[in-house]
Length: 75
Image 1 (cartoon, rainbow, N blue to C red):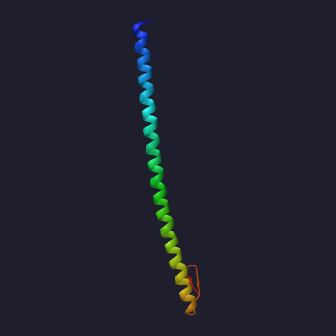
Image 2: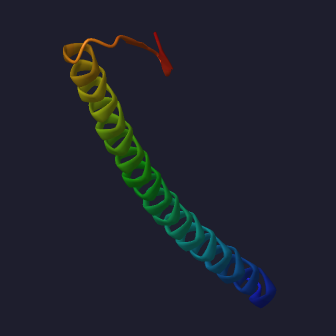
Image 3: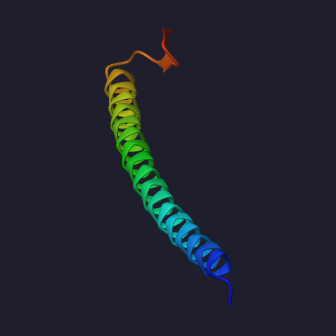
């Protein structure tokens, strides 16, 4: 075999190795990003649930005192 052909094959294998490593690292980075977004969205959902629960409890308390709340408007 020609020496230049061997060098070309070695370079191709080296490039394949670099690309494979890049794809693996990129996948890991995407996975971390997705997990971060999941955590943030879970926190937002939980805080919204707490806010809605407080709003419901506030509405129940005001109804028990005789006032009716429809949305944010006191009737």
